Length: 323
Image (cartoon, rainbow, N blue to C red; front, side, top):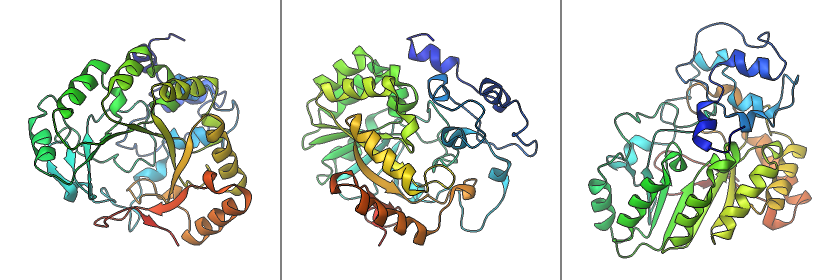
């Protein structure tokens, strides 16, 4: 496998049959039928952590298209968390007090089948090259002291583009923190290269990097190295997960995830209930079951390894604790 993360992305699996053949599963478990509008994209670095021959592999389940994605299920909608109502200017969402989120790009390195933004109109609403409207909005809001780079995945941008963005952000007085939400350290760890780390190290604010892993098997030596590189820049690294039926909705899987993330130097942060996005109903869990699992985590783990169990609701002023 090449060390060039861009070349690795070009070599990613884009067809279910190719991925299933790679895992020794053939195409017998990929049911033909109506095709999802959300294309498959799986880097080989992520696929290499799947267990060959295992039909119910928890990593495979997260990325393999399923015919149930085309079913209409009441309560599952295209914008489950109210992103469009939070849009203020192109590429900027202002949902919570003190924080602005930049849709830095619509691109991701992996297409998770439960993605809450799989229907987001990225073609019409991402930051793009014209930064002025978003930066002017932030500068005009004195309560905003934290900027979140999201997407898509912000680390899909070239490091030079990221540096251009943060150079402009540094001109805005009052910003105190930069947060980056990214799945790339997990699915394409070679993205955390020397140039990216040099950029992070030179930033004028404390940096929080929130990665996204849902199962302990998503971590390996390469991911550990990527996290080490992030932490060496001074970044604080946290993990947020989604409770997913058939992936991690059992006590053992969640305990192993929290322990494995901590051994990699990552602090468990949030355990989200599924955002009820159209096409993802087959991942949904019963809230009462989620509460029971969270209680078991409290019993099994020290407090610093127990993530906050939350749900996001459109119009709410913060992520809502599930009690």
